[in-house]
Image (tube, rainbow, N blue to C red; front, top):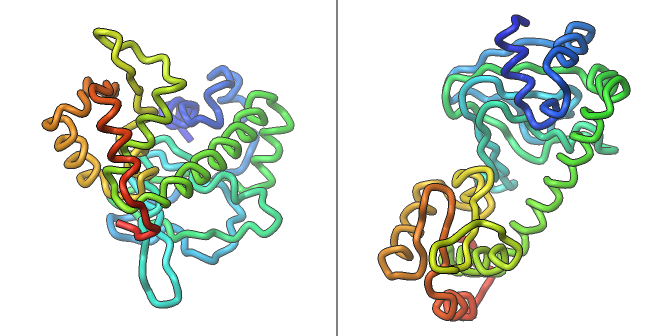
Length: 240
């Protein structure tokens, strides 16, 4: 692994708490593998044992879940430099609940579970980051499950904006409540259970109707009452 790869890998949430020089030293002491995948290829299969941590260095990937009738649901997308299924690695039964595929040509670095344990034992920052990552995954999945009670994407967006604005510190002109989209609109789309273009179209419609305004990654709530009415419309468990 060259210096450029180490510098990029250090940007991963699991390692960014560790100083670069210290991280480079730690990585030089563990085993790892380099993987290349072409666009459309399968990286990991649903149901397989996940015994090494995969970290996406280049390209984009997706995770899908399928049932016994072959129906697939896009669960999440990944961009550099993200760890894939880090919470599964230390589960009692580390079996992947999703299939991970290459959305573009991808390059991935993997570390056996034993090597990740070594890194955690040698560096407190890495251990704390792994614990935080697991907690963040639980929060993400809990919020996504909560949003499935709404029958439409518009209702999910309205509810999420209203809920998030209560604790948001994003600045807003004229004192309007605002929400900062973190880390990206793609992750927001994953949370809503839709493709990124579907989210963009709905946000654009809501903006034209005067419900919201969007400034980079900050969404300003312009009509709170209308958003509440959207959220309160008849709900069902139908997926989009």
